[in-house]
Each structure stands twice: as C-alpha cells, then as structure tokens.
Image (cartoon, rainbow, N blue to C red; front, side, top):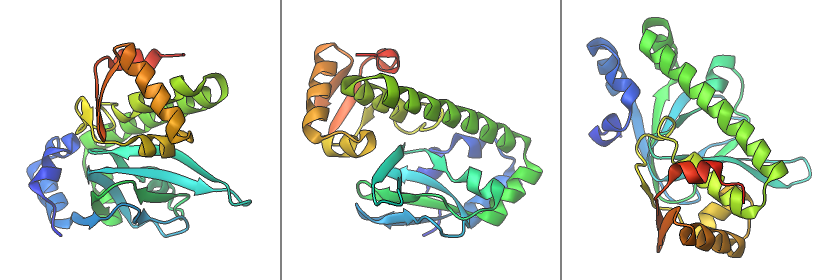
Length: 224
C-alpha cells in the first residue's frame, strides 16, 4: 500500500524535508497491515528498508544459541528503527514481531541513503534518534542489573512514551499487561502488581487494554 496521510502526519522528520525530498519519500514509502504475531522483519535478512510503526506496537527480540528468547525493546507508534544496520550494511541482527495488529511503513534503502546525501535535517534527526536510542539501551542495562520488577515496569513504560522516539503516542497507549510482560521479561501477574502500585502512586491511570501516563517524569526516575 502507498503511504497514508496518517503516517505522514506521524513523522515529524518528514516535514523538515524540502518539497522534492518529501515527494520522493511519499512516492517510495509503502505500508503493510500485519496481524498480531506476524514478523515485521527477521534476523539474518538483508536490510532493505528503514522501518516505521504507523499504528500498533512491535517488539525487537533475539534468541540465544541455547534457545532462550530475550526482548531488547518495544517500538511504539511514530517510531522508526533499523538505521544502524542500514548504515553498517549488515544482515539484520534481530527479529521484529507485531505485538498487536499493526500498520508498518517501509522506506527503501536507496531512498534512505539518498536522504543522507541530500538532507541536513534528516542527518540531524538520525543523530538525535541514535543518541536517544543509546541512552535507552544504557538505561535498560541499568534497570536489569540494579532495579526490581516494579521499577522495570515503570522504566519500560517511560521508554514507550519517549516523545522523540515515538512522537505519535501522546499520553495514552493501548497495551496489555501481557504485552508489557513480553517487553520486560516479567510474568503477567508481576506486571499487574507493578501497575497497581504505579496507579496507587498516581503515576498512571489504568483501563482495560490501555493506560494513560499521569507523570512521565516520575516513571523515568522510579527506582522502586
């Protein structure tokens, strides 16, 4: 499918391009509707696209040589990923799976590199995104090694509401306790207890299959 106006409106970097650059992106971008559990891309595949989440949420994961799965991060609406593999020209190092029904955008490799060659604003956006992503992964290591399950859930939610990485999320996100469990490596019961505590503390408001963040700063600094 051709790029939707919904997606265009959720990609702030696109609006900083000049008219000719915007036109090429709109022409080359394609979108797919994926059901929950479907692969967005697979480990070992050649990297032919920069990939964005128009709607829904996906998880980036890997499996050890012994068969143990690990979730690296989640990507919410408005987020883009895969620029590292495109820049290094290497096979994809991870699987990406839709956690729920999702709409996914694919920008061809050639267009991605053309933007690098022709757009200062696009280069600036990528630098900012890589810096944010690096900070996110450093924070994840800290969480896994130093903090308990309640803090892991809080910090995971804070990452999903990062306005620079996921500009389309706002303050409300459709996500289930099971999906948070996938992203944190915790059981659904443990996630439930953590969410109940975060709601009692006034950091989030819960509803069936979704939540609203009341204090993003509190989630970012919650240490349990």
